[in-house]
Length: 336
Ligand SMILES: NC(=O)C1=CN([C@@H]2O[C@H](COP(=O)(O)OP(=O)(O)OC[C@H]3O[C@@H](n4cnc5c(N)ncnc54)[C@H](OP(=O)(O)O)[C@@H]3O)[C@@H](O)[C@H]2O)C=CC1
Ligand SMILES: CC1=C(/C=C/C(C)=C/C=C/C(C)=C/C=O)C(C)(C)CCC1
Image (cartoon, rainbow, N blue to C red):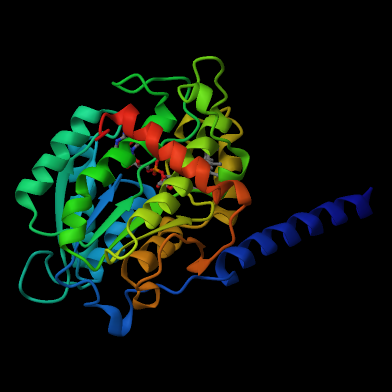
């Protein structure tokens, strides 16, 4: 009995030490805004969708420190203003200059309303962008929704496909002229490794025949990759590049629709603290693709941990990518 107790205690202690070691000694991605990089994005305008939370917020913070003018495209103005205020405070506390001031290298934060679940909102947002912004150097399609119950967007699309793919499809197309006139410019698309479990079932893109929330998330993330590859093909020779990434598993609000019993939640929080990346760690590949000279001219590639990663054949199928593009044009109403 005594031996069993000692063994259990040793196992628990070993487990705790292993978790702590993994957290503190584990591989860390080098941050790009240290040392000599501080003015790398000076004079550049970056639009980040879903910049009030998680990866988008962390990406905004990193690019702001690199000197960019960051436009936060967010669906809720209050949440976005609150996040912007926090980011400005954090920058001040870190000893950085006031964003927007002429005192130093830090950039500027601008909040604009953008609901990707509404084509009307995307169109209004782009109209405002074209009226107010003389240039756009980087577009980061980051916003996303994960495994929500069956819901439809304002225009009747299944929510995950509508927000993660179609809203960003329209947004990107309406901003392409501005990106081209600002070239060399970049588009960064945040997808997920979970694309592997998706398929583009053209006969039921709105999941009206059946809805599986995991499959629909994976399908929307596969659509992100096919969109990137088809867009890269269409943008050849324009000096506008587009790349897609998997951020890793990151501790954010993305899991908001996953129901976990109250009693088990602390255990999940512990597991996520030990094993998931922090938002700053998760944001590094987005920051890398948005700013690094190493990927100048690189287009149509898939990245993880700031390195190119190979795709499954289904994500490289050109005929599916073309068909998805054509159908998306019809769905969002931009067929020429
Ligand atoms: N966290 C992870 O482990 C992984 C994340 N990803 C991807 O990373 C991206 C960022 O997610 P993450 O930071 O984790 O999650 P968060 O939930 O923290 O952030 C998602 C952001 O998207 C916004 N958003 C959701 N719906 C809309 C909409 N209709 N219009 C405009 N904005 C919207 C949210 O706004 P609001 O706050 O108002 O809800 C929020 O700002 C997503 O594309 C996700 O698929 C990929 C792989 C793993
Ligand atoms: C952190 C955390 C949760 C889990 C979130 C998860 C597991 C998100 C996974 C997202 C992935 C894998 C996205 C890929 O594209 C819970 C359980 C909701 C609540 C407790 C805190």
